[in-house]
Image (tube, one colour):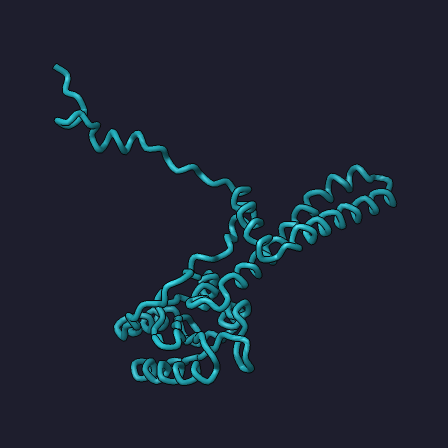
Length: 247
């Protein structure tokens, strides 16, 4: 007698249940672009008109050149892809700005901004210093420019936190450059959208093997284990760059 692929209760086996489950539907690039547009429009309602203005403006220029040249059909065909690229460029820039605006002021916003740095730096997912009363945070990164400490909070409080963490790191890495950056809108602080650029501009001073050794020592030093206050997780609110580029 053939053996049924089920248990004694008649329920299908686990393998059969898994096979019946539908695979998650693959998200196409245009779905990602639409999601980015919807997110941007909530923060920046004018984005639709700006994109249309850029698209129509480039088409108008292409037609003008074509009429002057006597080949308006050719220039129109060439102009349409450039008009689409121009509109996508506007969406990309405004989506990034909207994403920063959405997370600005939230605990961990600096870590989300640092996460957009694609290469050359590694950052701890958790803050290395937390003030549980004020919710001020300090994040740490390692790159060929040495160690960078990034704080969130008012300047007078952030300076104390950064100085304390700087001394802590210097005890383990006395000859490694340590850069401190305060994120905020006060004088001497770096605005959140400009944070990635400020880190990338730091001058490299270490070799790759030295950078790896610094990371190893800092892992031994450990990080703060206090929990981040509940609320929105800014590390998940990042613009999808692949979707914005149509890939």
